[in-house]
Length: 338
Image 1 (cartoon, rainbow, N blue to C red):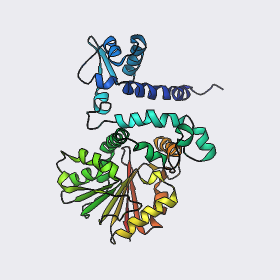
Image 2: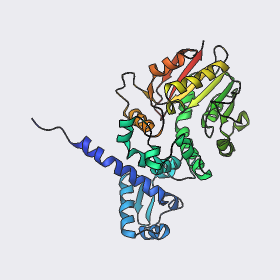
Image 3: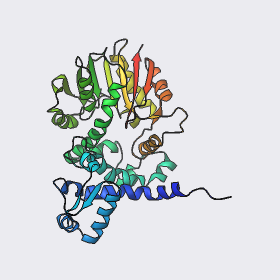
């Protein structure tokens, strides 16, 4: 009997090398330096104080990954890099890549410890305990900006699809709890001209969020309010939203938040959830399982299927729960209060 094709195993052996190649090029500033036009390897080496020959290996690898192009004038950014790897792009994922390189990559090196002990790896990797995830995100203005711009890039991909997943036209006031830079609130207001929105975020976040809202055609319909959704009174609304929030926590803490939201909603009010949905039988998708392991490594939470979310929501005062797979980094769930 012949052996199966080894290609999937070989691809997995290589996978972290590809990620780390992109991470390193971004952290060295390669894509930023090439934003204004081509530069040869020697010029880039001088700019970033690197050895020319090793840097050229990195640049050639980035060409093979589709991140750079190479011609007579040197290396230049590909369309992918222009869209997602330079800070000036409205869709940049550079912030999340920096977070992945500085925090997630080292913690994934301790995945076996997370599996054995069932806890995140902030203590083992960085000596951080307590609410380490958010302490890391917000310990400096620069760290806060890096994390928020990273989440903004994901939001620009996901939020338009999330707000289109259901007919939300009956709602008049959306409150986005922990909505980061306000990308979901903006997407909803752009789609529904009658809708008002409030971004409810921690004070250390709202200053950055106000910067991101400036210039939007619908920013006059989006308010920003400081608050902690676990402890402060929630603004009145007929539709609340939580995006990439519930997967941070275990079931008990989710129930606390969902019950707070349900208590503030009128009958028929809604809760819009943006999370990636696992298949009902937990056989996929692969991306969701990778993210669920990521949540094990860095939070108390996990990814869930629609029936699992429905069980949590219906036990907390909601009736009908529907889900839509959007094809974007986040899917959509809408729960309606009985």
